[in-house]
Image 1 (cartoon, rainbow, N blue to C red):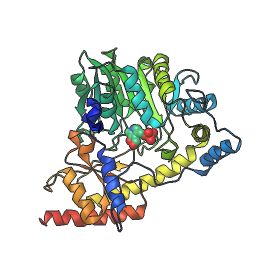
Image 2 (image 1 turned 180 degrees about the vertical axis):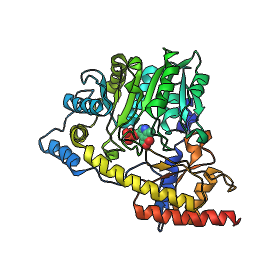
Image 3 (image 1 turned 90 degrees about the vertical axis):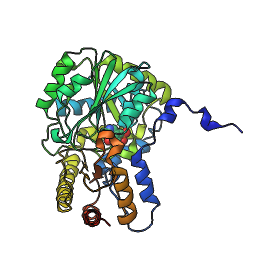
Image 4 (image 1 turned 45 degrees about the vertical axis):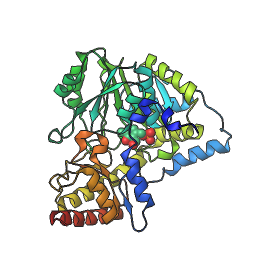
Length: 395
Ligand SMILES: Cc1ncc(COP(=O)(O)O)c(C=O)c1O
């Protein structure tokens, strides 16, 4: 018999599976009253007008491949949305690619830019795919660990210190998964200043949670600096803000040559993003603002309930102003983040994710998603309080 495991590529073998899925799957296998606050997925169903646009496209017979980079109408609708929200014009013709979720954009960018051995600065703690996509493309991730005392924001001097002559690009994601940290326009100016000293570095800004910002209704982004326009690419999508995870639709906007290179890979490997989803997105980008706002208000309410519950349980937590996660500290309780989450799940039947899943600097923390019903959040914090008190008593 062939040992197929031995045939797997070294790089694939070296990348560990995502710890988020592990806890989600464990929770699904358990019987009884299990609450999952482990996965980054809205509990809302996609708003009806958006679903209807998808359904209507099927009725009308749009069941075919779309152009490789997406239907022009969908690209235009997204470019109009970006211009409305960020005040930055992109050409629907050649500065945007519609992808299979933001995830595909992260993969394409790595494959389009990296030569073996190139370094990529990854700002941690961060979404689990950043390092993995770099490694799959034979790049070398160089981690910058942001700190709780700096509200998990990237400081200009931290970026400067990580740059070498091998740096190909940097990737950052704000509002942040897992911390909920948000960077303001003024703070991004500091990052812009460092980048101006290093004109060869490409910048990938993952803004999947741009609409889930509880500080301001105006998202700030590195795409807003005209002086960086020739080397910033924004990865974005509809999964989080519009509750469209299952539609698998996202987009990348940026300089024409990079979009062209990404489109080439997409052409060979994916062909085109789902047509039905593209019709839904035309509606979402044009007429989705009010439903985004309703969901944002509800998340904000849940965020406050969760933060109060964490404070009641005696867990110190940096105040998150974006996305739908809290990242409390579990230091002093005598357990690693892995042990904490495993025991919390087994003993109290609540699934959350160890901070270490998002990078070494996430150790000592856990990620709790509040994209869940208010009842589940309230019950989860009661169980968390019990668990923490038992740990403190040394049970
Ligand atoms: C920061 C961040 N970026 C990108 C993604 C990918 O999202 P999708 O592929 O569903 O658009 C996620 C999903 O959790 C995320 O948290």
